[in-house]
Image (cartoon, rainbow, N blue to C red; front, side, top):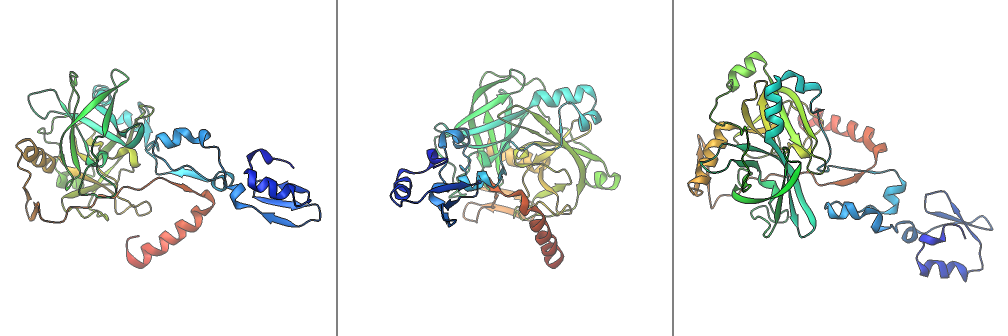
Length: 355
């Protein structure tokens, strides 16, 4: 019998005692007898060599079945999906050379680990935070418990990929706000050469909207260290996220861009990017938190005043429900379904205004 090396022993014995001769037909799980009868054996079909996908397991991604592999399905929503232009090409040419160089030395990639399995990976940026070493501003998705969004996962190890040294160092969680999805990570004995200055005011939101000014979202992949940028405009959008202090841009980022900075063409810090959980409606935009709100949150965290954050009409108290910050989970996707999915999304947009 052909290809019997990947079949479970039980199924092989059943076929051997049946006195029938089986022939493996293609890669679709069907077997044909000498008399022309077809049999489907899904248990044999879905057996995979887990050692072949050991890297996926260590990265925290689901291992595919043989069915998924043979159908040509691909893994999407990973922390390695690139976006925009890779440094130093494309949109990087819109920066002055000094500005793009400073950004490349300032933006880092972070990953959290539970034992030897990666929990989450995203982008961060060095900021002027206090009189000690500059800290890394990033998203609290790095540490948030997926089963209970009101808690963090204890005993996580945080690794930081430093762009200048091309090496990984251990980071320490300094402060965090699960409500506003903000985290501050410390790296000992490392001095950032050009941390982002949150007090330097870029062009304000109103002027940027009127002048249609270009803004740029930055991200870095933890595995490879690849630095990326996507340009866009500030917009008056909305998203499924329930945080009320978010602004929006048309910069298209992937999951890896979570926690990354949004800057203007002069390199001034505008805000921190999040994932909007929407893929087919450009009017919604990519959400980010403005630098002024971030400064207020960081000040509260630094002074330990975590009981109440006040932003105009928005007040957060400990007893109030926490804002939800969903992140798309990685899954195996059949590319042949994309046209049907796109059509369904378009119909939902027309019917409801937002998918």
